[in-house]
Image (cartoon, rainbow, N blue to C red; front, side, top):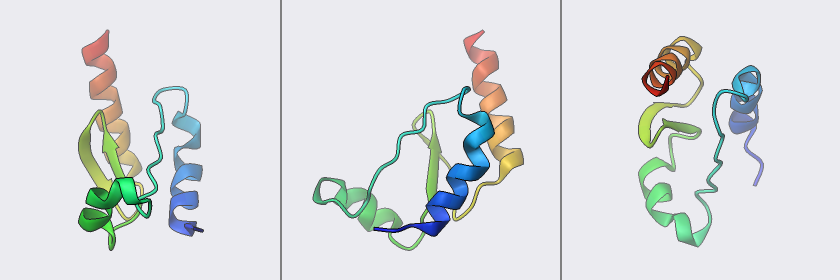
Length: 75
C-alpha cells in the first residue's frame, strides 16, 4: 500500500543510510499484526537499535543525537 509519510521519512533519512540499517516493516501483513495493533494510527514509526525513537515524522535532531550515542558506544 502507498505510504507517502513513509516515503517522506525515507527521503529525510537518506543522508544517514551509511550509518544505520533501515528495516522496513509492513504492519498490514498478517505476521505483523502486533505492530499493526500498536501503531495503526501512528505511521511511520521509528525504532533505533530495538527501542522506540519517534513517530509520525522524523525529528532529525533526536535521530542524530541517538545515532551519535550509539556510534560512540560502539567505538
